[in-house]
Length: 272
Image (cartoon, rainbow, N blue to C red; front, side):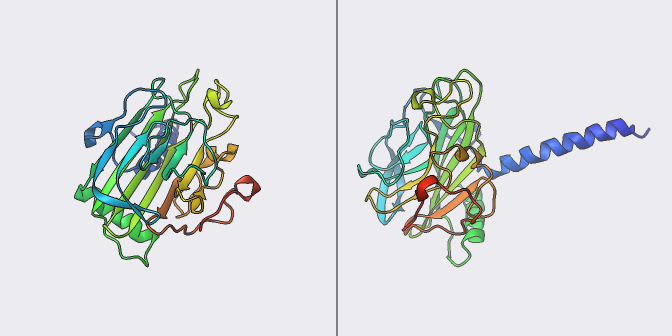
């Protein structure tokens, strides 16, 4: 018996709704308990312990052999970052770090922060393929990766179930280093202690995304940082993949930033 026309419409509608979610899911590299990830404690403004790396990771010309995964959307080198209201880059205090989404995360209220260091050949092959696609002029075969994922994390003072899911992947072949930032679902920009609205997670001082070298000269602010436009980072990209930003960070370079990506107010966006 053939399905009715109404049933066909329901099936087509279901397929239409599922596909975007599948695409969003495929943006992230595998994470979570199935990947034997470690998990940060449930602690407002908390961090991981200092994590020693099996191989040095070069960031802005300096080798780092350890890092911290901070609950507030930052991967830092040399020092923890408990600060919850973001500052624009460059920072004057010499802290080198990557800010996938620097804002006031509260994983006590919801969500988890996962991380792992890996040499899994399946993941490294996928990362290599992606990097080669985005940087075809640079010979690169990933030999190591570090994956940190903020999974449906809540904001401080939240009175809702809103959550943000984003990810940072660090990778190297021991000479060249890249960082891939993935944004699957961004529902809030600001915690209540940063003057955000407890019901919406918006307003106040919004999240910041980018890189700070620590030398007060070299930095990059992803367009939209610390404005309401950062909520749309799931739709922006410098590699033509909505929700993904990719950077070479050993000798920092920015490629392919589209001219129609929203600019940071006052021209506060540069790379050197």
